Image (cartoon, rainbow, N blue to C red; front, side, top):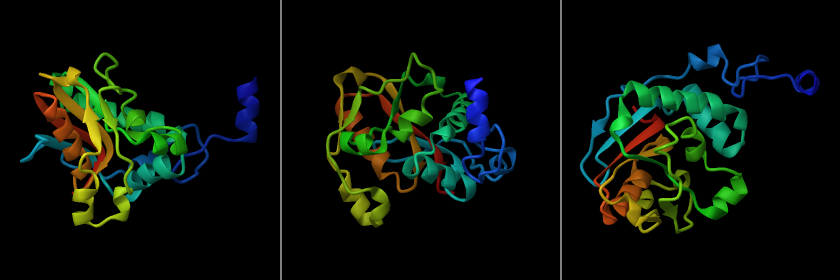
Amino acid sequence: MLQGVLDWVYPPKCGLCARLGKDAVCDICHKEFLPLDETPHQREGALSEVSSLFKYEARAAQAVRRLKYSRITSLIYPLASMMREGYDRQGLDDYDLILPIPIHWRRKAWRGFNQAEALASALPKDKLRVDLLTRIKHTTPQVQLNREQRAQNLVGAFRADPAVAGKAILLIDDVCTSGHTAEQCALALLEQKAYQVGLLSLTGES
């Protein structure tokens, strides 16, 4: 009965277009998520492969911004479900551990959650770890920097636990554009003898 009263006072609506309805991402908005070729792209460097599910534009980019900056937490369930579907389609179960890319504790306290952890919440619980990779350096948000500044901004920002030694690690993030954040995470993991590191992001560049 209480839920019925709350739904009457605050009717459920789409977190993107505000259309009334029970789904946090309505069917119309969902169709405006522009898919990318999900085949993992091989890379040179610490990060061995990268795969993004949707282009970082249109409704997918809006969803990332609404979740991260406006704290529209109703988006967590549908976006996490999309991540799980992508994980299953790509057969990523060969990875030993799944690590959401961490944010600094000060930013997490201000935001209230880590968006990468939220997006990973539907992935296999027996592989999901949030304690093996830590952000130890508070940095300027990457979105405010140019490409050269981004490359330097995150150097030394992450620390990995020795427990990752010999493990294949799948990083999870909301968006991958330059890839500098994931690359620095991968470097920290490889320093602790991780076997290999890949990335699955909700959105990315085409």
